[in-house]
Length: 152
Image (cartoon, rainbow, N blue to C red; front, side, top):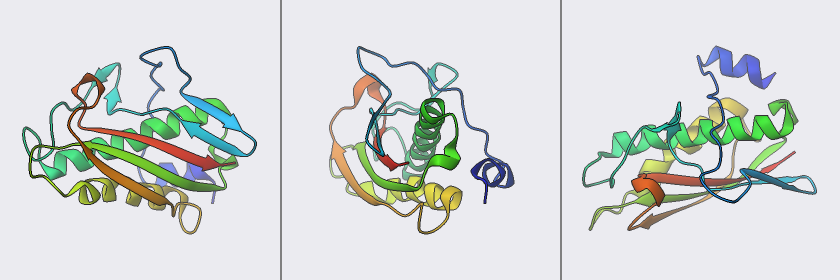
């Protein structure tokens, strides 16, 4: 199925890609692999969530932030490729979850982002390996940051 038709059927509109916050590329291609920089939960130039999961934010808010990060990554991949239909496979997602002391449900937070990729790209293209790491701080006080490796 056409990815844009799939996005439409899921009532998903890709956001406009936000510019990098520093001196780096949002996406870099090496051969048939695309590597994204760290992606934050930003919309219309504003960060949607701040704080730590298990502290100021709930697991559910972390899951929403993870979904925003995934859609931002896809918008940056679309800007690079000009066509998300060129994506053959989501290879890997590396996720950082800003965690309050004692919070250990990073995987549960990131399941929402993983499921969104499977919903959009279907199986097996959307299935991926993933690492979810609890960290003390993420730039701009974001609760979630992801990187992706995508095969085109």
